[in-house]
Length: 182
Length: 115
Image 1 (cartoon, each protein chain N blue to C red):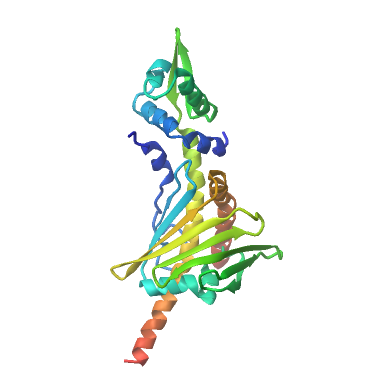
Image 2 (cartoon, chains in turn purple, yellow):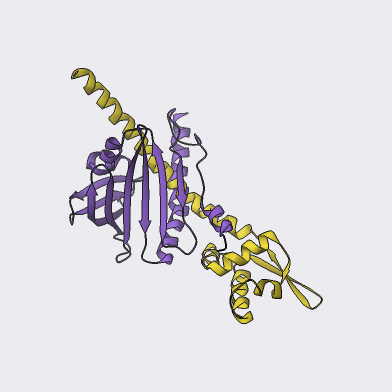
């Protein structure tokens, strides 16, 4: 077996702590694995909170809507039928009134350990992702793993590329916020 | 160079092996590189061409030999791409942390009320 050091090195990055964000907590350390030629993205982060609370924040509409979407958009939970076969739909709206909707179906809900559901952007119908969220308790902290599996490598890469576009504008919004505060 | 080409070039196991090999010994000949892959010379040349097109490998002719060199710059571009996506999630998780802090404070208050 030959190693693929080269590729894993470039696609696994670790957060620089306390670079951004408000308050004194600093940002969660977030790790990403997106290997070339694979159809998945794995994102992990450890939160300084017990597992049942992290699970609640991911499964209760009024909590989820506060953190899921980027801050420049308002997120409205249109539907969240939390049971096997039940569907969900979130609508995001920007300042100009443009809307982006996402929806899917829940496949497995094991409180407070695991959540499996499909994810689809209404703007690109037929491109379905399978999401698996696992919540692991670690000495009072919680490790959250978000594994997204795409239908094709191209779909996976398109999702990664989207971070380039939306990520940049989000950062600009943050900068504007900080400047306004100062 | 388009990052998409780079991702495609990196997507094959044999091509990653060629890059690993060049990262250890730069400036290898076609014969040296082909010997490392379990395929025909023609097949190996095809992989090298894809790497060249993605800008990951550059070549130089020295006499009758063609030498191959690793160019890591495009890989850094892909890393930037992934890093932006990671940061997007980090911002999202930063907001989740704020929600979690509130939930923890609520629980502590409830504990005080109901001993």
